[in-house]
Length: 259
Length: 285
Image (cartoon, rainbow over all chains, first blue to last red; front, side):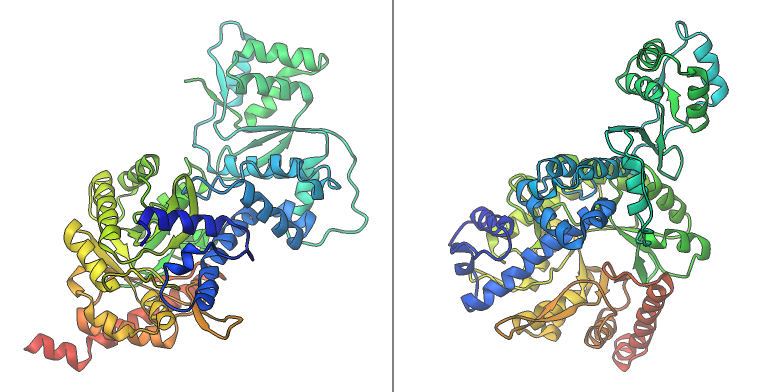
């Protein structure tokens, strides 16, 4: 009679072995009843596990699923589960390596923007569940910008996430996140994007920002000072009107007081 | 806690619940779904907590697992319980994690002394971490272990007796397991000490015929409560009295109105069961 720990080890290896393969010999031996019938009964647990995980990935990455189709998505999801079996009892964050996985998943190589769409969807989810915080208003941000060398720091709202892509990833994502049909003549200019994903109140917003503003946001996200952020913006995009861009971001509740 | 039936809380019903505040006894949620730091799930839950008692139902603590309980997970549980002060708190008689893997399925335990010791130690640990007693739910079973040393009812009753926890009696699970194992659901329920039961779950399940021709009942929470389970529910209420009762409907989630109507059917069943002669007899004498 195996110990409970041995039984759970065997059961786990059965569950995480891809579907369709035979259970290890020791597991059916631990069960009452016929081996053939028990193999079918054990399959119920494996089906439950895979359908829970595939459904969780599909809920997090609806645009990826729509771009590749349900069948391909299920195939990719099963491959991902085999490499990255979940380690947390929370399903909320499952899929944090899905974009990275897709970037190396040869069957998906014909869709070069797919990993970036996955990255955007995961950051959207992170923004959705992030801590709440009160933003500083545009007038106070303007006052800080007037005297950045003496101003107390600003930080990004805790829900803020950044993403840079060689592809028009947010436009692809917008077209594919709802099940509505896409018109045949829809075309998207193949431009790179700099994105701020943020949830200042109840709704997650995906904003396209100028490269210089993005550099400033990156500096603030890395914990650097407002002065450094302005310098980063100038280096990246000398012609940028920083006050105007910061005012627009501040109006969108992007910044909080540094604690 | 009102004995009026409650419903599972689904994100697609957040707005409808706040706008129409239908009459249901309580809202039950999967605790793990509210372990994010903030955002809309907590905004809605805080607003809904103004109108309804809450019940927190965990699916990931792995009380039956031989690996140590996840301290971070218990800390998140504690923070949520402290913040929302739910009226009911429950987990499962199952293992869901093992040695670093979270398997996200309620996996079965053999009913042995060894498994009972593991389960009781973890119930104690969770109750200590939360500073309150919990309810543990009977599983749906598709397999049976050759080494079982006691029936499930004895296993659950003993766990409750040793740890002071209560039982969450899932009558759909009782029926699903009994059918799958060719056992008697009535005998199971008759064995259950009603004083230990703090909550009842009702749900729908589906039927699957396997390649070899076995019919298995799959606990998928995806449809109406079936007639047999309604009958078992009525008989249970007649025997033990009313309990907070949840309608679980987690896949193919229906409209809020349909879910509320199902909870209404549970209330009607419970009321009819209380009027039955057996209860009158018990009361008078």
